[in-house]
Amino acid sequence: MNNESQEIREEPRHQEDVQDALREIQALLARLRRVEELIPTPEGTEGEAGEELPQQQHLAQLRKTLEELHPADVAYVLEALPLDDRLLVWDLIETEQEGDILLEVSDAVRESLIETMAPSELVAAAEQLDADELADLAPDLPRGVMDDVFRALPSEEREHLREAMSYPEDSVGHLMDFELVSVREDITLEVALRYLRRYDELPDHTDQLFVVDREEHLRGVLPLNVLLVNDPEVEVGAVMQTEMLTLQPHDKAETAAQAFDRYDLVSAPVVDEKGRLVGRVTVNEVLDYVREEAEADQLAQAGLSEEEDIFAPVLDSVKNRWRWLAINLVTAFIASRVIGAFENSIEKLVALAALMPIVAGIGGNSGNQTITMIVRAIALGQVQPDAARRLYRKEMAVALFNGLVWGGLLGLLAFWLYKDVRLGLVMTSAMTLNLLLAATVGVAIPMTMQRLGRDPAMGSSVLITAVTDSGGFFIFLGLATLFLL
Image 1 (cartoon, rainbow, N blue to C red):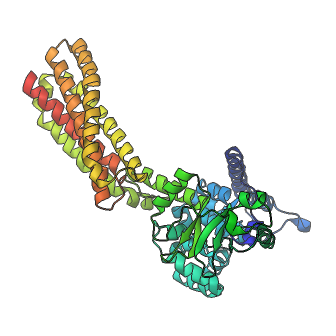
Image 2 (cartoon, helix red, strand yellow):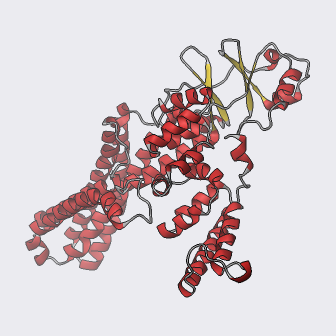
Image 3 (cartoon, helix red, strand yellow):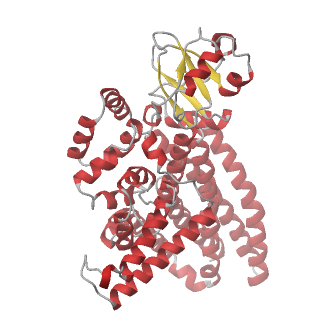
């Protein structure tokens, strides 16, 4: 982040304070709407003797409240507001802050804001950002705007931007930050300290200096705590650490996230295939990546896209949701046909209608538990495709145990309610078989998605529910028809 944009940033607030700010903004917006309804005033009109109108007072208070917020907090407020209020608030934000806020908001909200901005305003906002931040924003900006920004950049920044945009979104290169501090190994710590004092402000999350030779090959790292506690006359090469974790631009971002979690890193160097230092990855970028992936997985499990804004127009939300609803409709129809095939059995033994939702519901719950565990393990890199057989055996054993225990308990309850031993045995058998089916499908869905190169969580909740509902109904009603009727 450049110094100019850093100067306007307020301190981050606690979550309770952000909620208070959101409530204050919502109250000001509500009062502004009421005043506009009661006192409709043409734009640009002022009160007598230059007195501010009530609308102007509320707008001034809104602007003051927004100026006191950190860009991430402003982004949170914008995401929580309906579209009309969001755009009104967005018009009150200073151009110097717009770039930082666009980086913080969700993709859907960012799109809604960019649509309302003039090209010149977009260029002004983008020029406040560094190359790595521009690379994040570039896919959402019009081509003409990016051309103007690109031409306005210094040659070094232009090269950094070109490099950052050349890497896939799920790569280390896309997360890479070009702002770092490097020193040579043949200088003393005193010289290194004097070099640091030349900076107005160190790059964010600087916990170590990178030691390079004249060709920019990475030789080691010098943690700041080592720099501060050692004799200033000692050379950097004598105290630098040569055992370090390095990343390459084409490494998976998921790999970097796992390394940061495992080793509690704040930053890590990124080197090219020749060992030259090209950038670094910092913990804030990793956390953003992990958060975005977690949100995407959570939505994907329900068959939703992360592009949807909670306050999006109705048609946009319909387009986002219809695909998996259509699939759900088909599977629900199949489940109804399964039940329809056993209408005669249900008519003869009404208890079946009361008991069959239990079998299907428990199976769906168990399947979702299995899928959640497998998806999480895949995300953490703990599961490889060749581990499928072991996972099947393990989950089948868990399902068998749960089926016999909880199915046996339900069988006893069925016997107690309906005084029929055979119904109790059918209930136990159906529960066990459906849990085994849920375990099989719960492993198969994410593992198959992984092999196909798709998100393992995609539609998993919808698919597992469909299978356990139809399968549970078929197993339970089929056993009941076979052994009871």
